[in-house]
Length: 330
Image 1: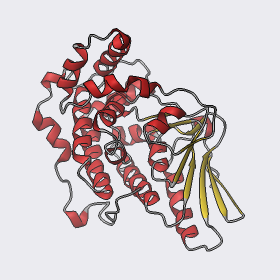
Image 2 (image 1 turned 30 degrees about the horizontal axis):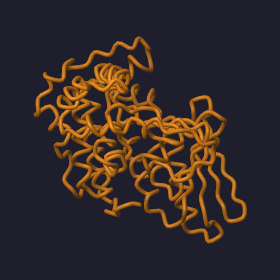
Image 3 (image 1 turned 120 degrees about the vertical axis):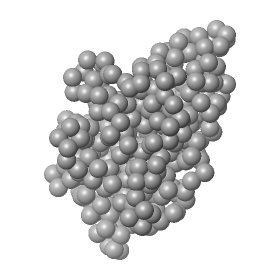
């Protein structure tokens, strides 16, 4: 349990994610350990509240253990599939946990960190908060429930955050409804100032339409943002951009548990597709920042390629997440 530091005082159980050298990225041991702790404390009348924190001053949790998943896929083992099943089940459980969970996310919080934070009853941000769902840059899509918590935002805003994964400060997180309390000094929300442009361009149902709308922007105030945004979209996997938008579209109509089940099927397809593995190689392992997306152009991604991510992989009762209840979340 050295990766999880635990203390219980005055009815408050505090769990500190303790991998500061890795920005507290989640390992399988951490996921399983958190699940065991939640089991124990659910039955312990002496524990009334659970607090989740990150060790060190830099991060709450920067995501999942990406290198381990890459190694598992390339070696042909099942570790990466099991990791996602355990992670998604834990994330879902936090939403419906019978005792209040507080996530103190004053630091970097991305990917898997968002998964364990967004279901908390109270999400606290501060001056060091840097929040994002940047999965499309590595050839994936925002997961860990993002098809639920981003799709519950106004559509254009959710689409923008899902497709681009911009880094949000505390004020942005509050503005977007991804945090509840800011204990740091007040700073302006950059997202709020960009909202008119976001609403104009990201409300479309296709990535091509979003790109075309951005290209037609004439307001001088948004010129540099548009250039950065188009450049950013151009560096991402065309397939995963389309899959991301489809996850957001479908997630708006689905219960929380069904969103996690949909994401699990989609991420298994992503492991097989190839863009994710080369994206991890290019961005994290080799760091040459030259992934080979297949295909390389939006116009070459046909509808069938997107639909392949949503094909049922299990009979309903055999789904690895079949036991998740259809609670609606906060």
